[in-house]
Length: 117
Image (cartoon, rainbow, N blue to C red):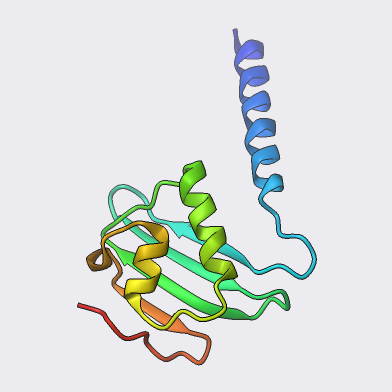
C-alpha cells in the first residue's frame, strides 16, 4: 500500500514538474513569476520581468487568489508582452478581472500606476 502511494506521488510530482518546465521563457522573451498565498491569508503577487531579468512591473491582488488555468496563463503571457502598461484598467482588461481586485501596481522605477481605487 505504501509503495503504491509513493509511486502515485512520484508520478504526480513528475507531471507537475513537466508542466512548470513548459512555461519557461525562451531566450529574448519577457516572463512572469507569481506568488499565491494560502487560503488563510489570500493574496497574489505577479512579478513581470524582461528578457534581461529586470523586473518591469509588479501587481498585487490583496485578499484574492488568482487561479492559474490555461486562459489566465495566456492572459499573463499577453500582459508580459505589452510594451507599456500605464493604468490599472489596462492590467485588469488584459487579465479579464475587476480593477477593484488590484491593490497596487508598480513599474520598474518603483512608481505606482495610476487608476487605483
